[in-house]
Length: 186
Image 1 (cartoon, rainbow, N blue to C red):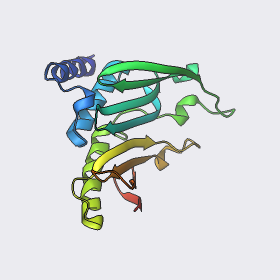
Image 2 (image 1 turned 180 degrees about the horizontal axis):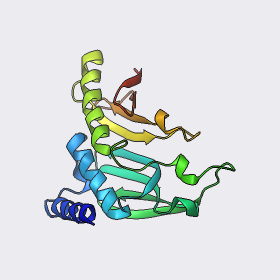
Image 3 (image 1 turned 30 degrees about the horizontal axis):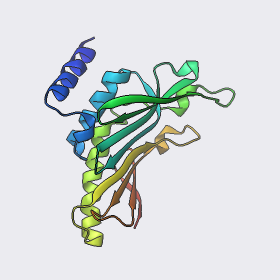
Image 4 (image 1 turned 180 degrees about the vertical axis):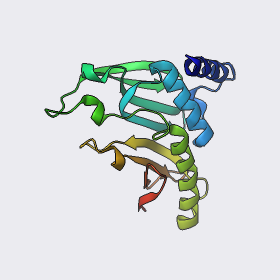
């Protein structure tokens, strides 16, 4: 109850300050604010199979999720948050292997997987790209949580995709849940 109240107060503060998801910066604080917006919309106990933040220079951040509040129902909704307006794009019914639970193939936003950490990795990735390729002020193209198809949560990754300010090649950096760099695709 207390956590829900705190989340509602923080979300109200974000909205009142004009800090909706579309205008958040690609850093730990900005992505942390997006996590609060998601928890406000779907609840603290929501389960996700997909969570992507895409940056579009014209309209800002677009958040895409596939989410459910009841994993055992096998029903999920695909939602997009664009220009601070939610739109449900489809409903999905999951099929899971016999002897498994749907929740085994989902993740929750908590201490293990959180958007503040993903935003921090975007900042680190920008520094790495600037140092390695001398690209000044790289832009976020996309950042997402990549859950393995076999449900092995320890193999979940944070993926950051950056591009030069004038367009061109997209650079991808993959990180483990602990923030350790796994792979760079220059």
